[in-house]
Length: 239
Image 1 (cartoon, rainbow, N blue to C red):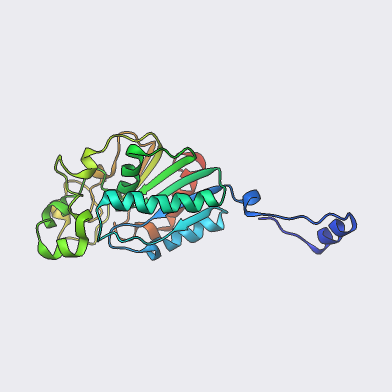
Image 2: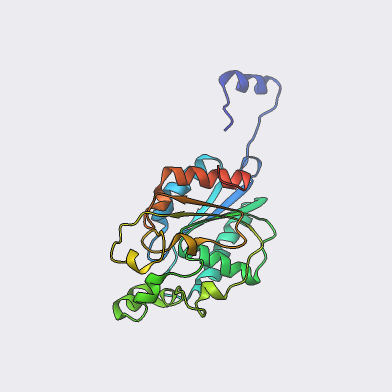
C-alpha cells in the first residue's frame, strides 16, 4: 500500500507533478470466490476480506446452488465472475472455492478456456463424489432442499464429478479431517470432514494437497487455511 505524506505532497506540488494511482496500477490480479451448496457469499466473507487486504480484486457473490443443475450454475455464475474481473482489466484470474464451487470450476474448464487463468484453490471439494449424497439422494426432503445439484454429487460412475476429465490448471486442494456429523461419518470410508472423505477431495492433476483439522462447514473460516490460500496464490504450493 502506498503512503503519501505531507512532505511528499509538497514535493509533488513544487514539481508541478500530482501522482495518481488507479486500480489497474495497483491491483492486477482478480480472485473469483465461489461458495458451497446451500450457502451464500457470506460464508466466504473472511476469505474475501483477507484477499482484499492483500490487494487482490475479489468477486464473491451468491448463486442459487439448490435450484439449478451444476452445469447451468457453473456457466452462468462463473461467466459473471469473469466479466467482473475482465472489466477491471486484470492480468490474472484465480479461483478460490468451497465444496460444490470446486466442481463448478472443473465443469466450466471442461469446454471453456480462460486465457488469464492463474491458480485454483479448492476447499473440501467432492472431486470423487460424496457418500452422503448417495445416502440422501432419494429422500424427498433432501431432493427438495438441495435441488438438482444435490443429485449429481454421488460416488457412482455416472455422477458428474466422476464423468469429468482432468483440467489443465495449477490446482491446490485443502480438505478437513474433523467432523461434527457423527451420523454421516460412518458412511464415509477413511478420514473425512463430515461430508467428504480426504481421498475423495483429491485430483490426479493437483499441484499440492493439504489435510487440516477442520470440518466441512467451517473450513473456509479457518485462519490457517486462509493463510495457505494466499500462499498458494502467490507461489503455486502450500507452505
